Amino acid sequence: MQSLSDNELWASFRKGDRTVFTSIYNRTIKDLLRYGYRVSSNQQLVKDSIHDVFLHLWLHRETLSDTDNIRFYLYRSLRNRIVHNSREASPVAGPDVEQILDKVFSDLPLEHTIIEQEGFEGQINALRKAINRLSKRQQEVIQLRYFHDFSLDEIASVMQISNQSVRNLIYRSISQLKEFVEFAGWLLLLIFNHINKI
Image 1 (cartoon, rainbow, N blue to C red):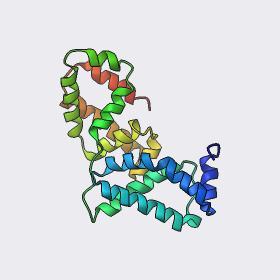
Image 2: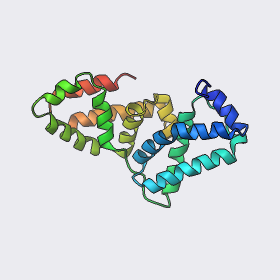
Image 3: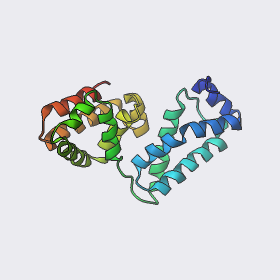
């Protein structure tokens, strides 16, 4: 089953193959939980929303549209479900800033060199505070792009905004970080180099 494309897996699932459905669930559940916890701080809401998504998929499998990217399809479905369910629960929260930073800095080539430098912890704390000051949508777009490696088009679809809006959110986020944080330009330059690989 590992060798099957997403198109083939989805087609088999839509025909009622329970083994494939279980495989899709098992292959995506951890990522869906991680993503969901960054969309909402209400863990029970996230778990219930994932359950709702998979129940809906199974019950309506024959009428679902085709997809060649199951993970993207599930992320978009989950976000929509969380937003829908959250109207009766807690408001949608922003992504986990600590984990966004871990992802960004773990991918930077000079990570270990930077960490050894005096005062770096203070700079990271300042950057964390700055990211916390970004809007929830700005934090979410950063998280989707650099934590989950979604393309701009995929982010636009998940967040139900235009590709240009995604670019604008990323640009504004970085611009605001530059305004909020007054420390060594080389650190922001490293982040820019990382996140400009679009």
